[in-house]
Image 1 (cartoon, rainbow, N blue to C red):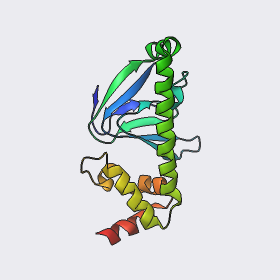
Image 2: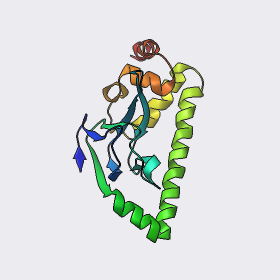
Image 3: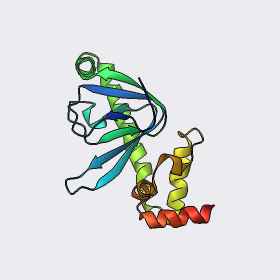
Amino acid sequence: MILHRGEVLFRQGDGGQNLFKVKSGLFKVTRLHENGNMVLFNLLYPGETVPHHSLISPKEAHGTAVAMMKSEVELIPAAEWYRELREDPDKVMEVALLLQEKVRFMQTRLDHLTVGTPGERMALLTRWLTEYSHGAQLTDLLTQEEIGQLIGVRRETVNRLLRHQG
């Protein structure tokens, strides 16, 4: 299944009839809170099977995943996924490895929020994203507000950092 930039893979609250293996591209996952705040809380990249919180048992989608560029995913019917999980012991190890990889990614993301100065955090995020972006610039993929959410600074700080880069 091919999705183009801006197309939705799944929406917050979706019932979880499918899981998806990201083959190529990038997705940003946002969550709309009751107070109206929209928060970017995750990036999905090739090799991941998502939603993560539904890898072992079904749960409605925690956020909305939107393609950041042309992306390819494999649609996996949830019933088939959970049947394989019950019947195939190797599938359990596959899920454990997927979750381990995501924990390691989240550790990297925490570094992006806590290491050094805002400029150093922006450099870390840019370096990480370059691995998956096929040459697209950070600001072509994410808004200044989203960049700020990922590195723990206000949009104005991101704007200032971008002005000083160029």
